Image 1 (cartoon, helix red, strand yellow):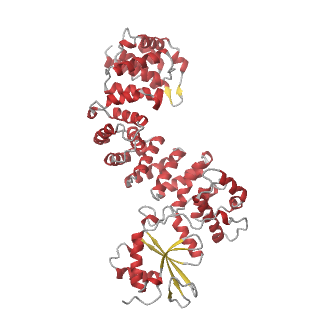
Image 2 (cartoon, helix red, strand yellow; image 1 turned 135 degrees about the vertical axis):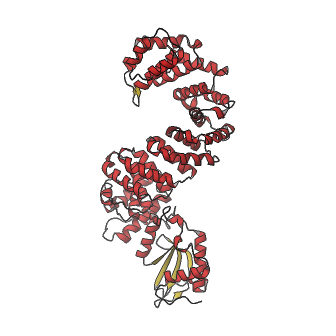
Image 3 (cartoon, helix red, strand yellow; image 1 turned 90 degrees about the vertical axis):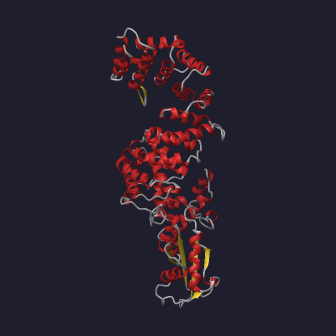
Length: 549
């Protein structure tokens, strides 16, 4: 039978029985046709759980006859017939130690050594060795050495992806194969539009593993291309893409919008680990996406029982970090009552939900000793969270009468990961204050307080409302805390304060400070010192006379 007709008929068959009947009806066929039959059997009989009908396939006379021919006539096979059969038999879970597999592998490696394999053949052999032996396979480097000599511009997308995968598991030294990678990155940039969801994900993952931080044009093109594939990525593929966005520091507004649409529609079908990565992406990028957060909250409420404690923490912590309460907040926190996790509890207090039922356990010496004994122990991050939890209870839960956090577990000042001070913005505000108050002695910047927080700018007033020198401690009747909030204290493209800055301002008010927020978006258009002084006068002293200079 003509090969074209053979494959057309073969690809229309849906069971191994049909394939065996079809093959046995032929008087003769080429090794390419025979290997094609094995490949079709592997396609229809293998799913995620393995071979569906082992006896019906492996014990079939036609199947055994095909395997016999491949085992004892391997030296007479064409390259395509040999390597296609090898790939099909691997997929069918044939014992790698069998004489059949040993014969095919030996023949493939012998032809590799003689330089007889084309790019397509080299990729097929590489895929087989990756499947059988993994990263420890020494032959992969031999294949890559041959690939370096080939014309990369003629490679198909599949071949390009296969080489990236081989490099990903083979490269151990910094500059090894970097010249090959540079050429591949340049050519891949020209074929990005042809890449499927799977290929896009694999290449992005390889670029992360291979630390290709200089391949900015390719990374940017792949990230933009991934937008249209979001509904079609598998869970693992989407995780790879999100990890690439995080690793390379890339952000794409249309990607976030496509992710919002996808998560809103598919949340109940998504694997918890995939959703965890979506939330990590939003949290690390400081993206407050209400459609994503609302959908994740609904998904958590309906199916929280199947999540691990770590997954629950990864779901909930971004709500606190980005200072957002979803519409289903009551049901959401109702689900959390039986979960104890320090990061999780800290996130709850950031958005004013207090785990009062857990506090006696958390502040008990027994629990703290156990926490100290487990990695990472009571490090600076954990003790900072414990201290903020303790301060929150003292300020916002006056009805709590249980154990307190012992001083030895408290920090002197809180860590601030996101809310670092915008030095340039602070300088502009200080210049405006100097213009307003005339002397530098009347305000202090970056003031440490006895309450663990650092105030950006502090102004002291006496009982009659006159400004006192910052160093004076007597007759202080009011303290004004200026919070100079740069862009890094807000969610991206939003005026929503991050959780740790919101709780700081809330606590400063409860501690007796008059908190005056100076957000970047209110002062970025102020062109000169006088306009800044007028703005500060209205913000800090709204009930006094207009500024006259």
